[in-house]
Length: 129
Image (cartoon, rainbow, N blue to C red):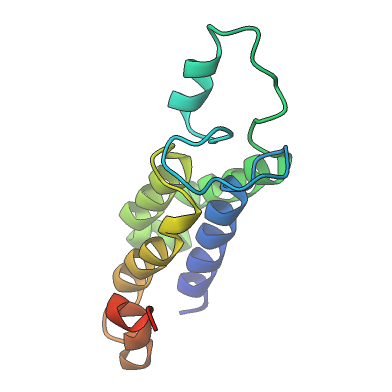
């Protein structure tokens, strides 16, 4: 049970770090600069004049690496598809900080489908006031 919570914590840490590029800005929209995903880095490589200041932070790279290590961990073998989906979301340039609630919702639903006290997270209609 503890390793499931760790998966959610590491996934959220990686996701949030990926939304804070090294230039101290926040990624608030899809395809905003500074994404850790492959599409963002390949899109900026032909333009040599663009400033390197808006790139993924070192912390984002480290937390992603910690998440990727879980693929080979035997404790997480039953949650391999969830780990892969989390890595895909973290590296997706289409995801932004505004998608954090939906990302948490997907993680909790996949990892703890039958825990009733987490229902507040599973019902997105309760997130808005």
